[in-house]
Image 1: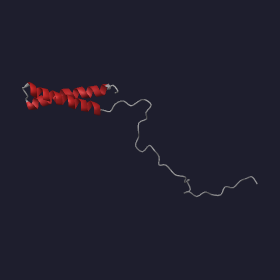
Image 2: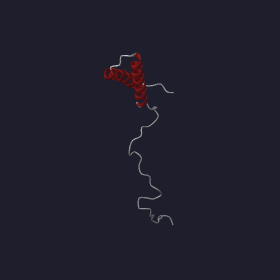
Image 3: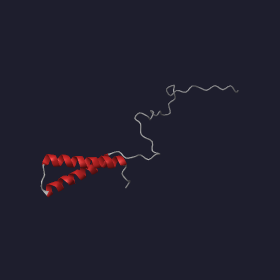
Image 4: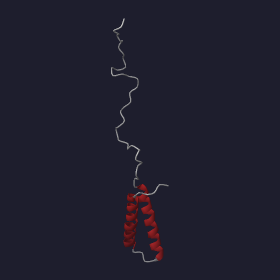
Length: 91
């Protein structure tokens, strides 16, 4: 399994902290069980966010660009598929 990059760590950590604080403030949990459930949910959400952040591409892998692949032509030439008789200067 590849190591997470700094962006994934930052987004995941920020998500855990902010979601835990928000859920604790909204639910006003006072019991240990309620706090444990909120902490577990915040960790799961942080893990999901960290996994979904796009990782680094290998340096040799090109980035796909929309519309970069030209339309492929079959055996047709520029004149619509008709070939003209070739004349030779040799006799």
